[in-house]
Image (cartoon, rainbow, N blue to C red):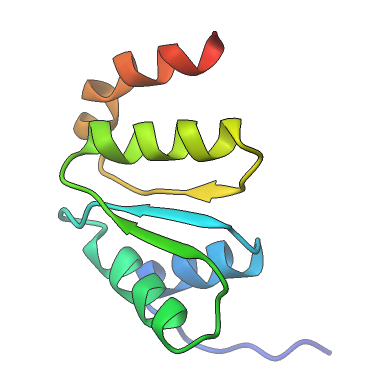
Length: 97
């Protein structure tokens, strides 16, 4: 039988990303998802997750880092809020080429 534990949702998301064995984390801490990338940075720093943690300066940079890493064959993770994702949409169109 599986064991249930209580976990704050942001930490659960970061644990799920860790379970997916991501290679690159493009992190732009912005409310409401700051706790996700904070916990991922701890997992990487503690050696529990073997990934490149890339702090970026905007949502566009986060998407660009993920697009570039994915083009090289890496499994990527980033997180953001709804409106910043919409603003970064123009960056994702380049990944189709």
